[in-house]
Length: 415
Ligand SMILES: [Zn+2]
Image (tube, rainbow, N blue to C red; front, top):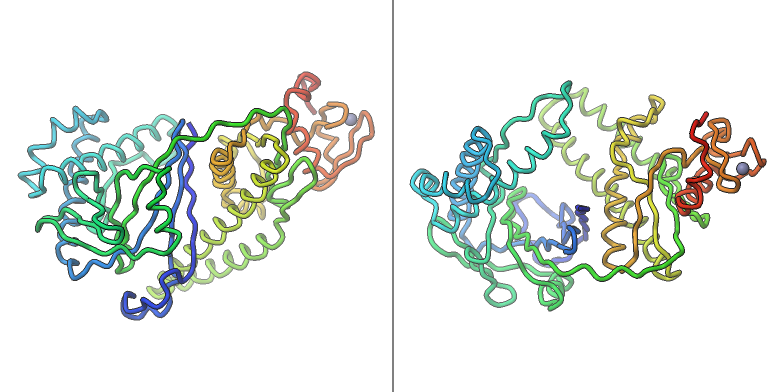
C-alpha cells in the first residue's frame, strides 16, 4: 500500500475578497492549500481545501468543534486503554456515553468515534515499528480547535457554493469560497465526493472535501528510467537529467541559520516567527519536490517508459552521513518526493518500480563489478575492473533502471 499526500499552494486565488481575512492580514498568500492527493491500493483520493464564509455561525461551529474534539479525545483514551481498534467494538463501547457526556447528535457522535479510532489505529500501527530507546507512544489527544469530521449524513453540498453543516445548534449554512480550479474539481464527474473535515486555521475555517476515483490501469512497458536521489543532486535520471541541489542547499542553509538565531532569542515573537518560517520552508520543499516529480513523470509519459526508484524505507537507520550533511539528509523529504512521483505516475498510468538500493552507487553499470573503491569521490565513479568512468549519480541511476540486468552480476561480498 502506498500512501501519498500532495499539497499544492497557490497565491491569491480569491483576490478581491480581502474583507474575508482575519484582522491584520493583508494578503491571502498564507497557507492557501488547495488540494492534496493520496493513493491507496486501487483508489486515488484527493482532498480539496476550500475556504469557508461561515456567515456569522462562528459560535456554533466553535462550540461544535470543542465538544467534538473533547468527545474524540475521550473516545481515543477509552480505545487506547482497552486496546480497541475495531470500529464496531468501539462503537458499542462508546456511542451512548459519547452522546450523554458531550451532548453530540447521533451522527456527530459517530464521526467523533471515526476520527478517534482512525488515529488510535495509526498509533498502534506505529507501535509495531517502535524502538525501545524511543519515547513511549502515548494516547492521541485532540485540541479544542482540532478538525471536525463530516460524513455524508452530517454535511451536504447544496448548490455549488453552499454547504450545510451539522452543529450542536442545528444545521448551519456556509458559503464555499471557490477558485476556478476548485470549482472544476468539485463538478468533475470522474471523482466521487466523500467525507469532509472542517478545519480551523489562524482564524479562518476551511472545508477539506475528499474525492476518490479508481486508479487508471498501468501501461506495460519494457523500458525504464532509473532515478537516483541524493543531496548534491536531488535527483538524477538514467538518461542524464539532473536536478541540482545547490539552490535548495543555499535556501535551506539560510532557513537553518535563521532558525538557530530565533531559537537562541527564545521570546514569544521569535517563536511566532519560527513557526512562520517552518511553514515557509515546508512549502518550499513541497514546491521543489512537485516540480521534480512532475518533470520526471512527464518524461516517462512522453517516452512511454516506466520509472524505477530506490526503496528508501528505513534510509535513516542505514545511511551514515557526515555531520554537516546530516541535517539535510534527514530533513529533505525524499520520501515525500517518492510519494509525489508515485501518485503522479499512477494518475498518468506510468508504472513505478521500487528497487533495492543496496550497492547501486558502488556497482559498475557497464560490467557489474561491485566495489567500494569504484566510487572515488561524491561525484565521480571509476570502475576498478573495466575502467568505465561516469558521473556517480548517473551510474547509480542506470543501475536502478536495470535491476534485473545488474543483480546477477553483483558479487556477493562487496568492498
Ligand atoms: Zn566496470
